[in-house]
Image (cartoon, rainbow, N blue to C red; front, side, top):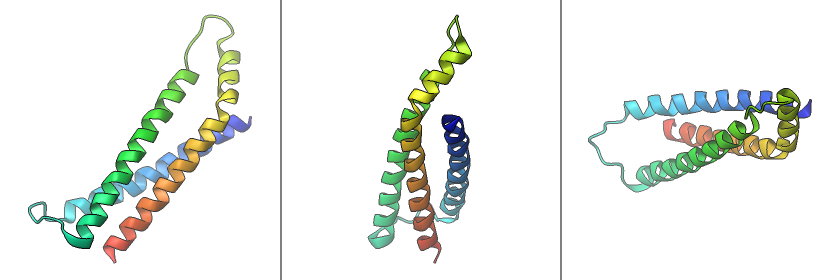
Length: 115
């Protein structure tokens, strides 16, 4: 059951990450797209872009893991799926920690920009 709890917690973390990304998207809309971002602000946004790119890679890997865990088989499907989830629990926990770290970094970054 621990794996099920981790997956549920992972979903909550993904929703929280989406909220932060939505806030950042709204912040980008407020920027004048014609003005180049230079200096400290430009470097900050460049670093932010790198973080988001790394996060996308992690999310793609997580998606691949979850798709492989959720594969249908002909015999004893639910039992095999439960075993696969249990076997990948450590990886799910690792991805969850990554998502939390990305969310916290993005949230802090966004807060520093609006101050």
